[in-house]
Image 1 (spheres, one colour):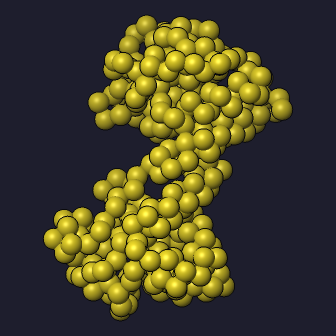
Image 2 (tube, helix red, strand yellow; image 1 turned 180 degrees about the horizontal axis):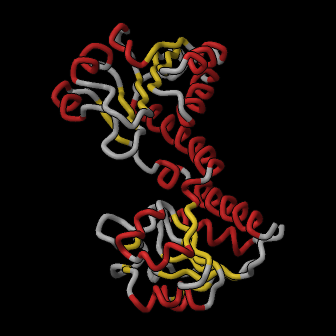
Image 3 (tube, one colour; image 1 turned 45 degrees about the horizontal axis):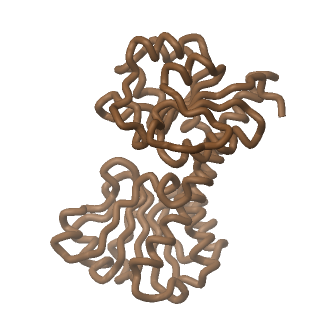
Length: 289
């Protein structure tokens, strides 16, 4: 492996970043953690201030998203708020910075944008996260549905990355599975994988389900549709932002509705941290070619 650097700083983040730090250290790199003052022992990883971590490292890794809506770096292991102040920015300038949702830096510290690379935009990151998300969604379904997935009437709305992985998993578990999509080629693949295919705009033609997974980041499961197909279902919304489920209608109808955001970090932080590391390795290797 030739990635042209020897030291990393991880500034802010949750368990994903802790596992990423441990994995980088296991690979022989010097790693410093900033914004993790409540972490007691990380063996070969140095826990220090964000400024010191940035100052002593060649590559800096920020979490996903890099900053929250208040412009702060997510730092649940820090005893105080972690901001991109002038001192920290000066220590980061000129170094390789990897972050999730780079566009959020524009309003907080645009001077770092020329040095930042968005690992969240990478296809391999998205694909591997889809696997972790699908596993997490299945775990929620098994915990929330009072029956077995085998034989259960399941619906997956959407056949993107997460929908594809969920389809394969649910078919292998013996679910009575229907999957919705819009493209004819996707509908064909759904049938080849062993599920029933339906156009997304024809979901209203279906009958009730036991478990529904929504992966479409648009308003799909309306009040009328929920009343027809989800009255006795567990509805797991995996879509980002506001999701694709009328949550107020779900509550009124007494439907079990779970908006499961950031599942890789919650359900599989070790794997999620490894995905961040691998994606950064790929980018650094490409830069050295």
